[in-house]
Image (spheres, one colour):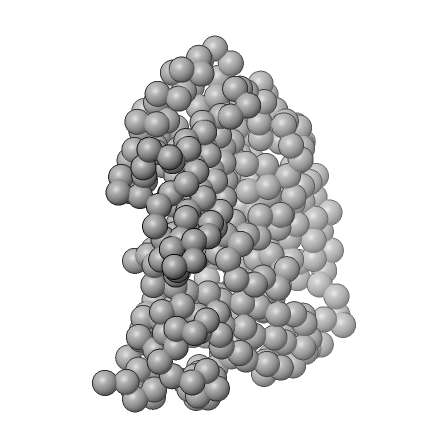
Amino acid sequence: MVHYFITSESVTEGHPDKICDQISDAVLDAILEKDPFGRVACETLATRGMIFVAGEISTTCYVEIADIVRAFLYEIGYTDSDMGIDAHTCAVISAIQEQSKDIALGVDIGGAGDQGMMYGYATDETPELMPLPIMLAHKLVRRLAEIRRANIVNYLHPDGKSQVTVEYEGDKPKRIDTIILSAQHHIDISNEKIHSDIKKLVIDEIIPKEMLDNNTKILINPTGKFVIGGPQGDTGITGRKIMVDTYGGIGHHGGGCFSGKDPTKVDRSASYMARYVAKNLVASGVCNRVEVSLSYAIGIAEPTSINVDTFGTGKVDESKLVSILKKLFDFTPQGIIDKLKLHRPIYKRTACYGHFGREEQGFTWEVCDMADAIKREAKLS
């Protein structure tokens, strides 16, 4: 059996890039709540003491961007200027213009909002039908945020990140080789205290014990100190964590980010559709692992290509699977929006801890409601 290693990372809600993703999606949600058909392409930059919001927005409603920004920063815990940004006093600058009328010409008639390639992936190695490394990385930082928000430990600050390396044997995860967890903290806390608490309250709570062995490396705050973080330690920008948002570096990525984009942007909606289809394919039993790829031309409704790769795990020929998908699914932007109910204000929650593998309310692309139909069309017993 071939042995190899796969590594994936995740970041907390207080990471500077994730601050930007979540603000961009909070603006989107605020607009969709009042105008479900608003066109939004919102970008955010965060640096010490300042949030800059820019983009192209066409809508019939008005939202106060500064209020959205401050409410979000307060919610995740940036309430002290010593952290580098304070919800109450930071500068908020906005530079918003309308969507290009040239783009609108194609979108208004149901065409795609841009050209590009979108990918969806699914695998049977976890209950969520996601790769194990990215799921563990997400769960670690969600738990880290949970113990901070619940004040189970009182010295953590909002920034943090994780990284998990899994050793595979053939196509199956065998063991965890390395866990890295970095947590922003108050200056007066000792490394020993941080290591003890995070090992007990985060790693031991999340990581399956059977996946650990004597050779597993656990690195907590490996530089020895993580006091300066958030926008004070690093400038954040929307769309810089696209591998965190998707499958942790497994499979392809078309390059377009999701956050701040309304569902007429196929960067987002078609990626959700590709994941929905991929997950239903694996759930149907026609394959154990699959990548679904779609491509679009700006202003054109139907995709320019649909492809399926089962990586040798398929029980049905891939060309037949493509024919089945074309029969069962509407891949036009409007068809995707209608099927997945994407005109709702559901996006801020997607912007941290991954857009996929979350069987929570609003994540319609994670529902396996087409698996039986695929199985029937594939004529599997």
